[in-house]
Length: 391
Ligand SMILES: [Zn+2]
Image (tube, rainbow, N blue to C red; front, top):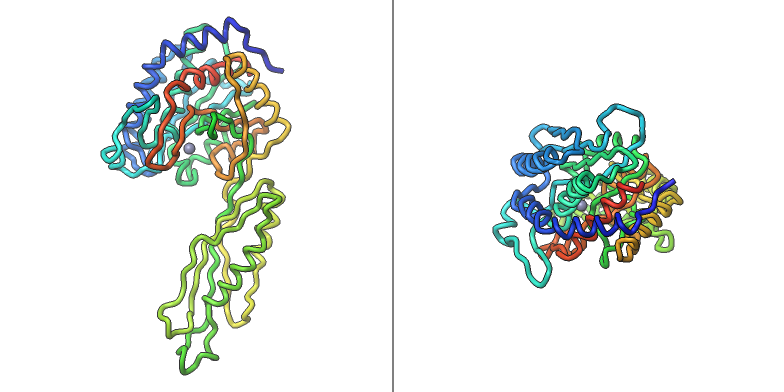
């Protein structure tokens, strides 16, 4: 069962965020000024330290725990509204990440700037503004004396952009005890939430043939390049546009010189799928590839990386609720499905109700024109606060 957001509460939230817009933007800027590409220990610490300090200033926050990951970075786990009590009550999990894809030095090349209502900066859209908004939503509920229906956990990982090797276990642990997961990743154009994300698989296919002189002993050679070229055509046949399955050989390498029959070749493969059933089917097909030239040896490594976030009935219901909250706040929240994966995919495997793309509006994630739309800050913040208040 979910509660509705009444008009007084909606207005209070909008007023609150309008008042706090300058502060949320200031925190966002400070986060962007601390560059934190995945694996940059110093940058990660600087960002997490700032967020921890902010979190500790919010009355409803019961704990803010930094989780160091070797010399890689730090995750941050914030518990609020009674989630630290050790009870078995299901939580609302707010999920995000503090790492970016932009290498150190990007900020010097493209400093923060505001132009035509847009604020530009490396990592501002994906997703430092989302981190700032998540904390502000906790503060808004505390200051407006809105008691969220469930304990709230905010988890910000430091390795999402690099495949979540360490963050995955934390995401899964928190998703397991959550009633719903709200992901602060950037929304799709028009501010649309993401109700489905494809899953991903990564494979490496290696061929080992027999080298020979291309002029003197051509027949004695067994070309690894030819073998993988033929396998690439087979892999392409696994694509199924109607089912949203793609198989892309994105890197292809092999051979040593043009006058030598190639002894070795390697292909790196990216697979995307909408359902786990398709994922398993494609994985099985890839793992059972056999050489067309029997003199060549094939080896296959890799597997499914992120499961798909499927638009299940629970996802649809959560989206419908979010849309009603947005409507009470005076805007329409659309939805879409996308090919890219996020930590929402890992969460979806363990918690049926996941809604992604709840961050601040903008464009240019991972690109040089990355920016947020300033006037959307207040309504996106009010939406997140309205969600944790009513779910
Ligand atoms: Zn992201």
